[in-house]
Length: 327
Image (cartoon, rainbow, N blue to C red; front, top):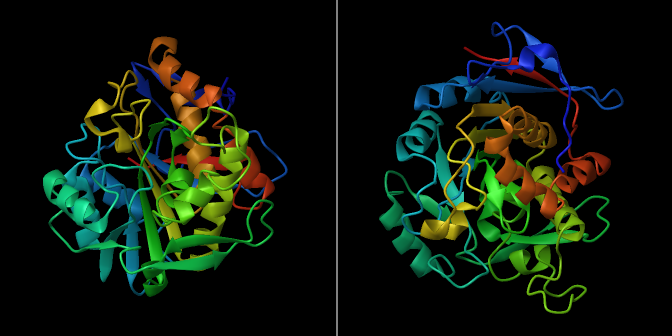
């Protein structure tokens, strides 16, 4: 089961809303005491304006040429981020480009040609999109990795000075949940080599399992892949998680995605990748049992929370945070 974190009483569910604090200056703390406290900003305003308001809280080090890593989704996926929201963010960031990579699995985004057709179908035509592995791959180092010393990424990641990670928070068939860690761990890895490495297809085989690296093993692979991207950008990376249309399935499921049973919650922003994903799990846990059950069962059955345990252990970020509401 996903752990229940007793943050403070002001996180109570009131009138079917998640209420975090009385004003922008109020904050709540996670109970963990041994890690640095990260700041995670939160708004219930699920609009382009709400997203920009939070981005402005965490963009101090976003400079130069900026990659916006988001998920393009399979054709006509019902749960992908709204175009107006993504467009508002991209148009507000000077010298920015949406970036993606091709998929490992067969489908509508496995090749660059297929992927570009899917971009048209899904409406991602308002600005250039860089499919980062279109021109090849590059190996990024992973400091202190247990499983990997480097990870294969789309080569064009080297063309950017900063990265904004814009994530649709939801479930995931293999990772349990897809937050910021998953977005860059799988999403920046190139489609032919890096995603193969993360999924463990050249690692230890499990009989009858098409993805050898599963559960805790996969979570650790994802964390180490995310470490490569975070290490590449240093302080010039920031994270936005949008908690809406939270199916148990990733946007890579397209029209096959299960219908969401959890209500929309809001948008979070942080410069700490572990803290923002942890805060999303904690907010999910505040929902009524019948709403959170499906997502929490998906997360626990895949040992998804190990992403955060291992991420903190590896120094990727902190599970201890302040959650600060922005009106």
